[in-house]
Length: 239
Image 1 (cartoon, helix red, strand yellow):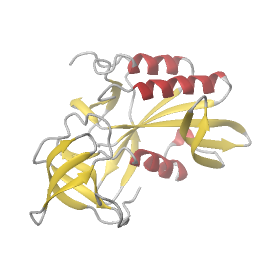
Image 2 (cartoon, one colour):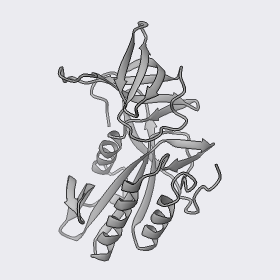
Image 3 (tube, one colour):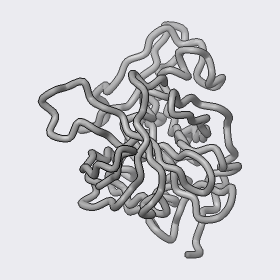
Image 4 (tube, helix red, strand yellow):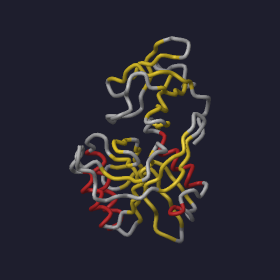
């Protein structure tokens, strides 16, 4: 995924109300920017952290600047939760996800199950459709171990149940974790933060839902899927 225009560097002053942050631009101007991330962003809100912003071409937007990247733990971390779907779609289209190659069609936000929309649906006449749910990951407490979620996610648990029902009906279901940072070597669930999600993911995997975890390579110019990481199913229980 290539950013449509050059990102603007700034310094984080504070993040608040989940979707807002105050930053200081390089010319000294302070302004409020949009933060497209409903999570806690644990470890990523330290005042003084360098950040990178995109500018919307829409003149009607109240907040034209969007927080895209933040520097943490010595590297860049993507915090825009709207980007993983785009990153995954681009990677699948170029064959960068070997597990998801060979499908003729790709559709976005397709209705399925009771009242859900699947992030990506891959179709082909020669095989069962592949329903792909995508989650953004950027949480790291221990070196090299990335975790999800960083807050309780009832919606995430619901999605896992829907994927299980896809498998029961004869389809292919994939839970794809897009890790928007470069310093992870393994992925696990933060069971101490959300006691429901980790068990639900393990139950879904046991029922036939495929779990894929891919780290990204990030620069202020683009973000792309880089390599697959192992999933450690036991989960993280300590604080």
